[in-house]
Image 1 (cartoon, protein in one colour):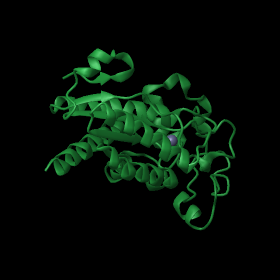
Image 2 (cartoon, rainbow, N blue to C red; image 1 turned 30 degrees about the vertical axis):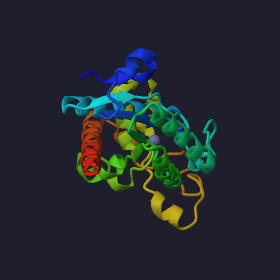
Image 3 (tube, protein in one colour; image 1 turned 120 degrees about the vertical axis):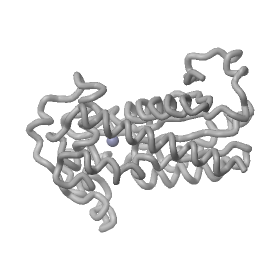
Length: 255
Ligand SMILES: [Zn+2]
């Protein structure tokens, strides 16, 4: 089966898709500052690329996959001190995702996977709330956790001193962009000093945004260690973990 992209299909073509078997995959990522060296769309692009890679793997395993257009906004309060970042409220996220799920459910589709490249906890919580609420429309919604789940396998491939603290616009995301969109990486990435501020601890201690968490330039990690080959490896692992997560979810919930 090819991987379908809904925005390129006609309604007659969509109508031929099996309602019981087709997985709808929905990438997501905010317009959000990513350091002085990467564009605001890193997570938008990350969501799209990762979703496509995982969809190709699932297709090879016999799944019918239809990719929906990306949602290019999330809750993104952490980066709001930096120009251009857009954040949505929790209520907007819940309503948006439920409206999309309700629409696919009305056409008879049974499964929707949301693959958000942005890991801000309140956003993931809002997505899970939306997924829970979507049950009443007779569609199952999976909010992927694959990026976090793949960290133990990804960390040993990274060259920075503390890959476990490479949270935002650091080595991993810089490597991703050097692999897929190298012309968009500003050359200054090579001169940026590592920032090993522990984002999770800082937020737990009350920091409200990346600035308060000691990320004055909106990055955490070691962008200067960015490497295109590492980027390809990291996203290949993440795609496999995502495909496995979906595969397991379908099998677990099929009974
Ligand atoms: Zn990001």
